[in-house]
Image (cartoon, rainbow, N blue to C red):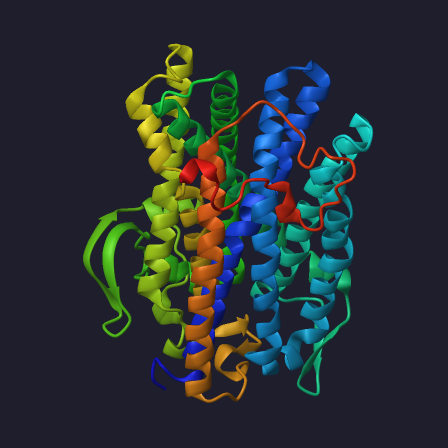
Length: 468
């Protein structure tokens, strides 16, 4: 089959929509928890700076939440339209898990979101804080159900296949499948890191512009503490996740390491750089560190892992893509760690808020969390290929019977619409961030005004008098 057949176009369409969508839930998860911390600190310390930051970031949160909901709807429809055979085969597992996400997480978020965004002067401070906590909890519960579903597709268990369909027999084992306990914290930490870097970049931008008020300094300080705490923890979780992948998805791990062949008694090197070739089954221009692959993956100096040539060609993922997306993620992680420790050193010297090089680095690193998140998801999803449900159903057997022309048309339409709608949304979100924290004022302070949608929480229009 060619690259532009219905299967590959369907994969491109789903990959584009999920990549566009995932950046919004990631920031939503991080900002929801950040808002809960800010309001908790304000209730505890009664310092105005926390209230100023709460109202500033709640507006950005509202825009981000709205875009996440809208982009997620399109992705959900594709299961039925483009992947109908997958839905027929595994819908009895994935359908209920996604329904639980709506019934528990989304309803919880939607139920308290209005109170959080518009209830500051309408309910008591404790009730408002409870609403903020429930929204934050809802985002984490949502991540739990989504990761349970996706992790089951990576490491399926707790089912039987009857008449060509998956039949659940043990929901506990389905939800708490072998990779779930590693992938959930890995994703949540990635969301927190992405948000911390976004917050730090926003603060750095204002400090470089000369806006060094207390609120800007406070959010830079809080972002750097989060980065310093979460990044080392992410490295530990990532290592444990890799060991789990070695046990349950060895072909994926072999592709990550571009490890083609084992020789008796020979340790696995760590390939720092290479141009892997699927056709030649080798690495060109490889730069390797002897024994380090064995040490990282088997925690021994000479241990071996399954090699790519141990698997039939049709059961291997695309090695160059998986190899490089993983290294992009790791490289950005190392830069995040460097930023965190640089910030710690400057904090001890009293120069955290006025070191130009550090602030420019923090600004450049602003999108790095989301880029690393996308690279990690590509490693996970492309590394699972050629399976849509690992070891059970191949991706080519899951796609609907659509003509390539129809798939190409819908793909082009989605790309154009997404770039217009969400491009405008991201531009608006960045304009809100560029305004900076102002004196706290609750959104829609008029008690006779009843906001109708989350975007009402962001009072500024796309164009205001300041732009003319």
